[in-house]
Image 1 (spheres, rainbow, N blue to C red):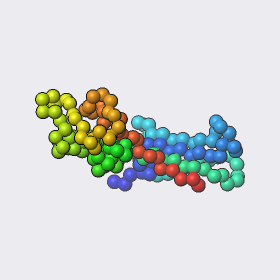
Image 2 (cartoon, rainbow, N blue to C red):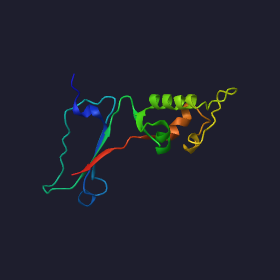
Image 3 (spheres, rainbow, N blue to C red):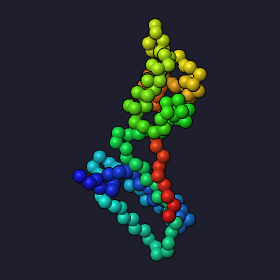
Image 4 (cartoon, rainbow, N blue to C red):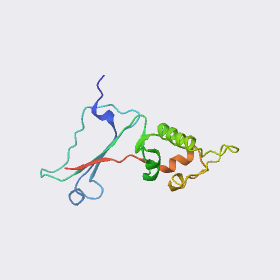
Length: 144
């Protein structure tokens, strides 16, 4: 089954010339909601009949959600962008392969020289600490 165009996005923002439209009317925004009706396109109408430069920003709707890793964590794991589950599995695999888990206290992970270069992970390890190394994916943008 073919997906409608809007199904690929979480949000869409069109930024018009602030000097022409003012600080309160220069943005046109669409955000997905649970009740969103999918569509094959978007139509934007604006007052005026002169060409206007605009910036189009698209936020993709990855399912399941994907994240960009902190550059140091990305180098360590060999992953740039992935789902949270794959990232956690890769981190756990790195810990096991390099024998970084304490044999007496399984909650303690010691860092090798590469692991120590990764940004400090709050929460003492585990799932909550991985979040500090994850970033939302960049928005796709184009000036027209």
